[in-house]
Amino acid sequence: MAQPTKTPLSEALKRLVGQPVSAIDTPSLVLDLDAMQRNLSRMAEFARKHDIRWRPHAKMHKSSALAKLQMQAGAVGVCVQKVAEAEVMVQGGVPNVYISNEVVAPSKLARVAELAHQLAASHGQLAIAVDSLEGVRRLAVAMNERRHGGGAPAVIDVFVEIDVGQGRCGVPPGRAAVELAHEIRKHPALRFAGLQAYHGRAQHLRTAQARRDAIGVVVQDVLFTRKQIEAEGVPVELVTGAGTGSMVCEAASGVFGELQAGSFLFMDADYAANERDPAQPQFEHALFVKSRVMSSGLRHAVCDAGHKSHAIDSGLPTVLALEPTGQLEYSNGGDEHGILRPAGANQRVPQLDDVVWLIPGHCDPTVNLHRYLIGVGGGIERGKVEKIIRVDARGALT
Ligand SMILES: Cc1ncc(COP(=O)(O)O)c(C=O)c1O
Image (cartoon, rainbow, N blue to C red; front, side, top):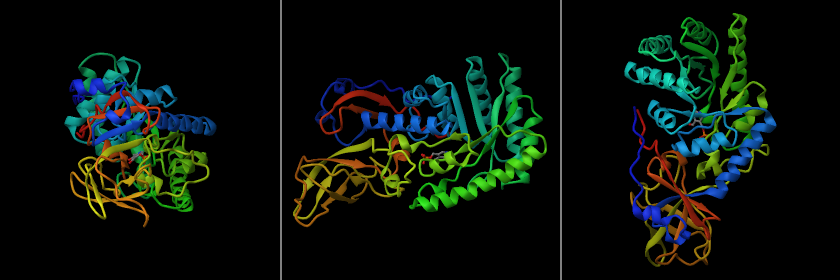
């Protein structure tokens, strides 16, 4: 069982609660709690309006506390990508967890079966994705072995993943999915729960029309597959998928019953570069790296946050334009440094001790670099630290 990162909060961190934002040391990962709450409310409202379930992806925030907050707002549970993430969520008290990913190693499947039984004993539910006959059979073996170990019997929900254009996991739409559905139904400890159709590469297609076109193809693939499965007398109860970039399309399709979007809660710079679909709720940036200028020259300044503070796989951070620094451009200064240049000709170069707020390019791997999120209420300029949120599934990769 993966151990959540339960290092006790340091005295310095505990003392920070109630302090003004200026007391937060740099570089630190800071969460604007008000902006996050607005994102959460907008998502809940969107789901209500479209009469669709949402099971947001917790691989983004890796925090059981935030997972529970999402469930209080109406989410049916959370998705995770790793067994270790699922273990941390369950230990943190999250009752509905979907491992939206393939797991085939018998040692991991034994942990999956253990979790399924643990959740069933407390009226919770575990779900998992599959894309191979071998994967289904191994899952069934693991569930049966655990069943003989005692306790109330559990049934795990199993989604067949189809590859709808990403070229990652998933069987091709059509016949292969039918065969997997039949195989799942042969095993009493497994329940065929429906289809997973997630198109990761569509999320950052820059125009709304390009994303609509890509999801249009996804919907055809799902309809084609669902029809074949149902033609053999097997109901497809739920189709699950969608990320923050495309969720308006899946929600409007009438085919998807569940949204897995995760990043909407924090919103990163890469998502901000997408043209917003008019149907998309206005999600705001809630995640920032607070950084400080440590060197200042004639043409540029240097801040204390490099790519050990934020992930750069989806591009460098952008800088929040605030007084006194104004609009700045960030370029890569290595692990521990960021180079800052004024964006306009008549702007001053940032001075020593100036604070800059970086908007990470990609929220998921940025969060995974930090043990805590420092939650600020009242805005990041003039607010106060309200709580420290543990990233308890940080590094939960197995
Ligand atoms: C299977 C799956 N579902 C949902 C998501 C959530 O996407 P996002 O965080 O971009 O909203 C991801 C992200 O990679 C994913 O892999």
